[in-house]
Length: 292
Figure 1 (cartoon, helix red, strand yellow):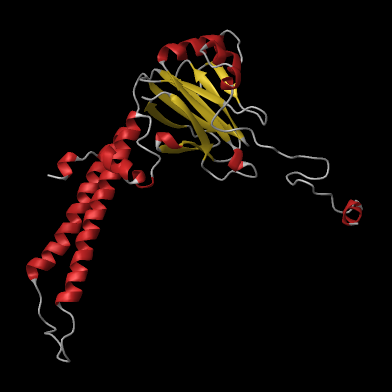
Figure 2: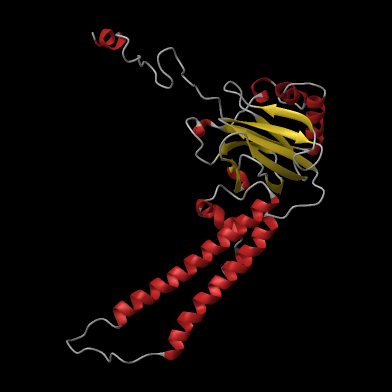
């Protein structure tokens, strides 16, 4: 009766989502979140039951003398229960995991939007495409630099297909609130996946695969807007506007035209060093002078 008054979202929120960054912002994320919370609750129930049995045995069968108990006694029903129950638990978890994984990996025949994700050291390029596959055309594009964080604008309630490729090493496309990431490979491999966003907002995106010196700063920003505002944004991009000008066209002005969830990193590339403040070059005599 107590459990019937609870929801997975309510239980998850009360316990900090058990380590996950909230319920997520896609239809696929909601299913993964529910599976995560349900499996965690199941694990806790099993854990409490096992702990109870352990402490009950410690107390009930504690040593009462020097006489050893019978060493050949067994309890067939109990042993069968201990064998069958874990198998059933694993089978149930496997069943629901397979269902959710199949749904997350499902690709539609005609997605509403196709975005090509191009990763490179150490930034991102997002190409809005007019079709699927590497031979499709790019109708608009946004690319990041050391000075400007790339912004990926996407609509809610539309099927969005991502096609990923890398220009150098393995990267990984990750927005924590999507509760999902997929590696970006160089060469002819094009990883694909689809999501349907259902919550507007601005979210930081990251590279989740160690890719070199500035891996930790390889960020982007996902901006989720209504389908109407997205159409206006894409139309402005098609007409030749920059990403910031297109952001202004849909109501993001001033600092809102740029990323708000993260900021460009300071390369600190100076004359005598490449990532250290106040350092001096070895062998130039400056070290001895600086120490005086």
